[in-house]
Length: 134
Length: 406
Image (cartoon, rainbow over all chains, first blue to last red; front, side):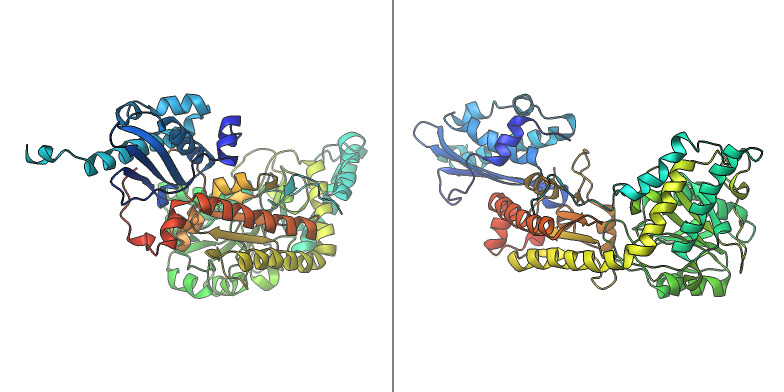
């Protein structure tokens, strides 16, 4: 199967590879997928706690070229967005941008899950104190 | 010497037609185009002569009598004819069949069809090293076992089953023994007499012959094996396989067999050395590498390697100028890893991360050196990207991690 140029580009030059300090309060970490399914994505966001804006994002992915490209693209897209804006990113946006074929749609779903999971982790860490007692 | 790209290292899938084979075939397309079944004119006689020579060449390669070669369209058809044909013919004696889980689909699917028709099939569970032993077969044999079908060499990992030992047991028990020798024929010397094989499948394009032609060896003496045909028609090939003979293909397969007979010993030594060099270079430079299948019982030109913490398809992208086969097929929603590797008990994570390298007659040392280097670079690059490798470096045992469902 031939990959689209954009997938190949992200695969050859992945953006934002790496890790952030997962113990930091300002960092949200999402790990989704499983090795036996053939893909695992780890996506991390660094949030400016005053503005709620995502200032940095990193990923590491075990998976096929489309999975790597989807997560690489996801880190590019979340940067500069607020946490709530980032939640608006849909897997179909990723499918369209990367021209993923139907058999690779699960890669985009996984990337969307990774964004949501990282944001959920960040929100959990930064829950307002009253929220837990309310 | 410069390397010509892309590099072809998928010779277990198919091989190029040898130029000498092509030359032998060409006259049969145009000048000697007769139907080998036309008994009453020179065109037919000439075609038949070509087919007869090929029959001798093929028989000679496997230690058979030319009369025991039945031409087919390839190993899938040969396996179907052998398994369904023998099971049907000997159904009165019993309806139990023995095969193994890591057989080719062309064996497993005919067996599954027979199950629907009331046969019972035992699928032997291969050990981690992939080799089916005579003892395993012995234990599975029942009073009503009529057929054992086990491949000579495995197409994904290249391991060689204990065929002569299994043949001996089948002979003692009076059970028909079929072997799918598609990956073995023309690669290492074999002899159907010594091995006690009753039925043997082979395919022309796996040993530098053309696609679309194969054969089934059917034993005629001690004992005479009978088969129920699965294609009805003009009664060609002793009534076992009707249909006008594919003369060009058959001539090509025969020529390919003759070349293998003459050259396979040298090829086996040369390719075995190159294969070992490939494996050595890779394992010297990478940790977390596992070579699948029993090392000392493999066909010489095949290597199946698992790379922990990276995924097979992405690795194929990293070495895109090299044509290999990936154990994982990340193209369906179910993301099924190789059922062959799974049946051996290779973990799902490693089964997703394996490549099969198939060397061939024209493979050069330069190509192997280049491939080894590209693989090492690719794996290193992908491990930099891999969250699993990061966890491994942090000392996390991946088998204890609870993964979210996906």
